[in-house]
Amino acid sequence: MAKTVLFDLGDTLVHYYRREEFPYLLERGLAGVAARLSKDGAARSPDSATVRQRAAEENHEAPDHRVRPLEGRLARIFALEVSRALGLCPDFMAPIFGAARVFPETVPVLRELRARGIRTAVVSNSPWGSPADLWRGELRRLGLAPLLDAAVFCGDVGWRKPDPRIFRYAIDRLQVPPSDVLYVGDGPRWDRPDPATLGIRSILVERGSYVADGGPSLPDLSGVLRLI
Image 1: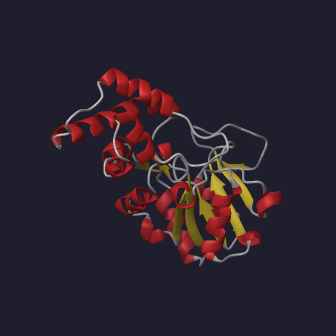
Image 2: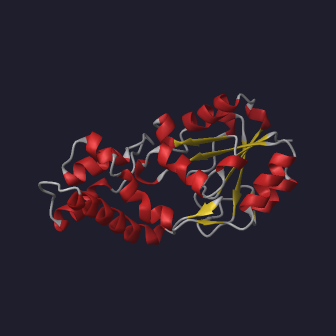
């Protein structure tokens, strides 16, 4: 029986966007950064065509799953110092956070797990390596933070799922044996941690992004309560 449940965030607990919607949100995020720079009186900013070209070059993740931080991408796109770009990350993320929709069963499931004494945590990648602290603020804004024992994002570790280091970081932080852990996600590419390597079980929720891979799955999040 699982004594700790780790959850992916996007499309598992909260819906933000479908894959085909990301280009629009990316464009809006870049426009928000450009508007902030203009408002702050930036001496010179790249023209829109240059921004789009540079953004296209940055729109990928490292093949070895190493995190490519958002502030570095923005610094390269807008020709800024990284320290200045870090302060612009909230402007970039505003359209994504604005699209958030908590799934109806998320809060009831988290509350029931807490009532049963089951520890819970988020273990999640973040779009474009966006800062972990912004995502912890997002969990507070959505009212989910009080229902979780921890929240670990790829930016905390420097590695994206499915790299085992992010899962190990969360397990070590919670100080629980892997055999007591169930991981719940929505996508086979990121959310099937290798049980032989990590010693944890995983299951997928059949959200809109779900692609059947022959592994165990649930029709909705409430099915987690029947597994513990």
